[in-house]
Length: 365
Image (tube, rainbow, N blue to C red; front, side, top):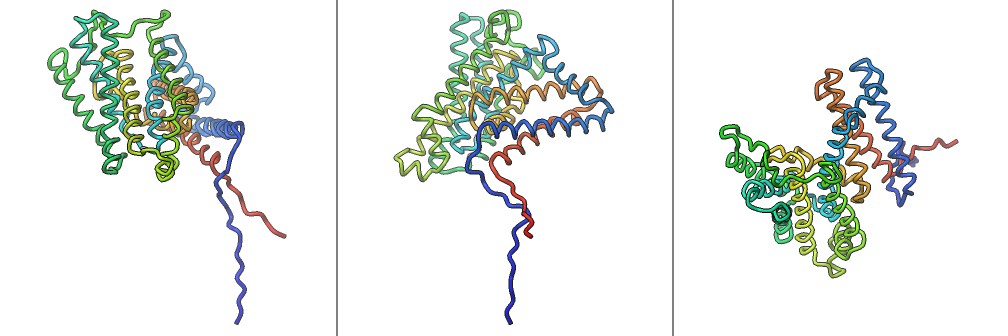
């Protein structure tokens, strides 16, 4: 008995794109952002019964409503950008460095130690040089340890770097207990509040302008390093295929160690910025979860450090705006974070449509 089997085309067929123009990719991202704002607007109306445009205006005022707020947004955006720049070479190499939080903390500890111990005895230029060098060294050491273990024993870098965060948190707690001021407060307090030794000086009349200059220099240098240097080429090849890299004569182990030292060093600089250029203190919350958020920045930007500038500003704008609408309209943090989550969901989801074609089954007559 013969039976005829019909093979029907699937309802939805997903295929990887071979290429997409930059203009089309940004159009998809723009549409995703527009949809995110519409959905967020519906959620806002359902929660507070207010015009979404009014709430979005409040978000803008929260981020840029005054000169002080605007510079706080710029300061925090530069901090986020610095961490993302540090993560870029590691993630481009497909080394999942989840340890930026710890690398920031050890850089911050090094900076705080210099401010406390040398603030009264060193001239300002020498003190700044010592602070930035020690923060770079400490961050690099914290980054290179998992790099060495990965190179020699092929350990899981995700777990290793994550555990290093917890070690750094405990180390920070120890330093806070050692340096607490006043005694019994369980906090370091503002370091050198009277003398301001080790604090970033004002540049062009702005307290945070030096933060901007340092991070933008790092951003430009990292772009050149990844795109035009031999080391950047080796990072890209290792990220694409370790076997190809070995066939091309590239020492994968050396690239692991070197790149993680660089990644940790720049995250250590972020710790230097956080302590010397912003809070002027050290605590277990100095990193503030930004080491994880910066992963989103680096990934969305596809490791292009100039694109990271825009994404860093967007995320910090959402953070500041969420705080403002939570206080202005008497919402709890969860409600404001829902809006941020919706926008991030659509932005991240747009990357799927940039990388993949979605085709629906055609009807045949």
